[in-house]
Amino acid sequence: MGGLALAEQEYLDMIAKLRVAQGANSDNIALMLDHLGEFYLEARSFDKAYKAFSDALEVRKATIAALPATAATATAGPEFIAYHTFRLHLGDLETRLGEMDLAKGNLKRAGERLTDSVAIANEPVHQRFVFGL
View 1 (cartoon, rainbow, N blue to C red):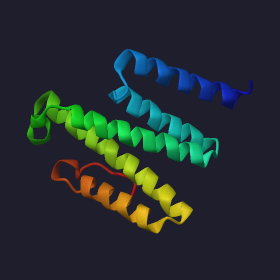
View 2: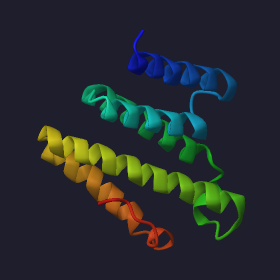
View 3: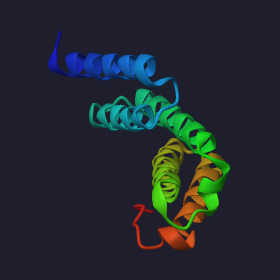
View 4: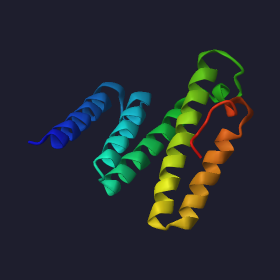
């Protein structure tokens, strides 16, 4: 097994173990799927990268939905930090997928994703962060 194949298998094994230990939609799974997508981009496996980023996006949406209802309006504390950290990650994933949609010529989907990302970036609490747009 070559180095890239071994690294890919390690990522997939870690994600599988995290799903068993933490459930299907944990923060760590969203992050690991994002890292797997970056790995696939480096390996120039664009379809696999897109799938990994898409999966990370869905997990991230689920982690946000699982937060207490008060998290979105919290002004400080752990709920505030979790909510906005997760939202920033969601925006980053939307940006990455929008760039890939653009590269594939899917202008409609790219526009939707990048519009969503800009909306997250423009939330007042997020304006000091850079999304790479």
